[in-house]
Amino acid sequence: MSNAAKETLNPFEIAQKQVKAACDRLNTDPAVYEILKNPLRVLEVTFPVKLDNGTVKTFTGYRAQHNNAVGPYKGGIRFHPHVNMDEVKALSTWMTFKCCVAGLPYGGGKGGITLDPKDYSEAELERIARGYANAIAPLIGEKIDIPAPDVNTNGKVMSWMVDEYESIVKYSAPGVFTGKPVEFGGSLARNEATGYGVNFAAVQALEKIGKDVKGATYAIQGFGNVGYHTGLYAHDAGAKVVAVSTVDVAIYNENGLDMDAVLKEYQTNGFITNEAGYGREITNAELLALDVDVLAPCALENQITSENAGDVKAKIVVEGANGPTTPEADAILQANGVLVVPDILANCGGVVVSYFEWVQNLQGYYWEFNEVQQKQTVVLRRAFQDIWNLAQEYGVDLRTASYMMSIRRIEKAMKARGWY
Image 1: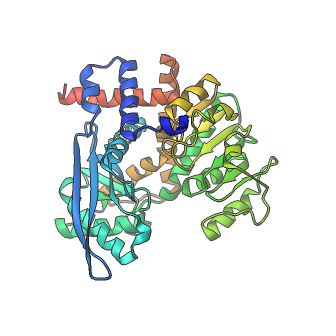
Image 2: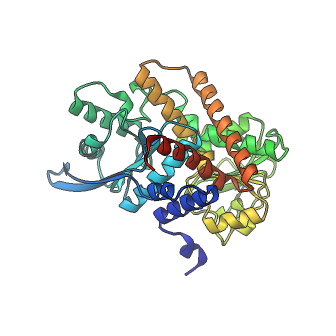
Image 3: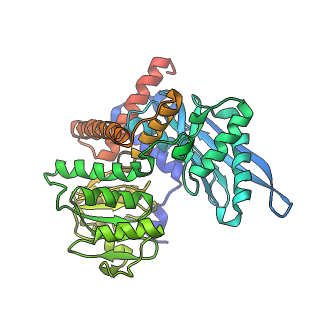
């Protein structure tokens, strides 16, 4: 068994370790970790759905609600064959910290249904989505728990769920789910939000090491929504994107890729190839080891492990994906002087604009695209600066500082409520 296989721990155990390390570092009251180590509530539901062929199948779904000391629960819903209790508990824990890193008045939630969406027709998926919304309806609400899209779910799925929820409560409640289409209470600048934030984190990190984003070199692993928008905003800011990769291909051009053409191909097809000959094809391992200013892993978790962390030559790693770096790899990157902007800080732009969507829903008043991005920039700049200062004060890396900042905020709210 390789090191990489050994170190990919149960995600819930990783989450608990990270919380414990930050609590210890802040020297908090033992009650703080005691309350934060488990979600306050976890629901498991089973619900029947009639399939297109007339048979009935039951599905299992989950909703974990980690902590609501600072405000209602918030977090995505995924459709995936591996969804299980421990995964949603871990993800809800991480959401608590992601929301508090950005200073949003939310605690973490997460949910999912154990299924492979490819196995079902669109009509079946609609019935499944509605069955799940109906099953979790007693635990959610605009001021209780606000779910959002996650892996394999989108605005269409959220719209079905809002409709199902409203048919139960018998009043308009658009703010019960975020990530909706703009025509149905969604926010402008939501699609762009995560990638915009990833690049903005990179720009601020470059400033800290005395580099301008103009001419800075980027390698982007993963070119879905997050990777695409990271590349788009980096290119707009004058950076030189030298490498991008998808599941099928990794492309490198040391003089910089023709990003206008790459971005256009993605917009047209929803994916990129190297048919136009943007550069030479390299392996994923080579991409992660390129000598660049910014490496942005925007694909899956556990990409940088103890086996390849020593090969990373980038000055800055900005985590667009969730959990792309294992704890063992983190230690190696730190020892090698690589500045890591952790996922909960780098990719929190999405939840920031989800929060704005919710605020707009509650007010029934909607903002222009530029206004949303301006407000997002203010929140993200403050979050980065607060965490940078805390890291300097305690002599810790940005990941530890992010957890410390979050715990400090939750700790004060729990204390004020008299929970300990």
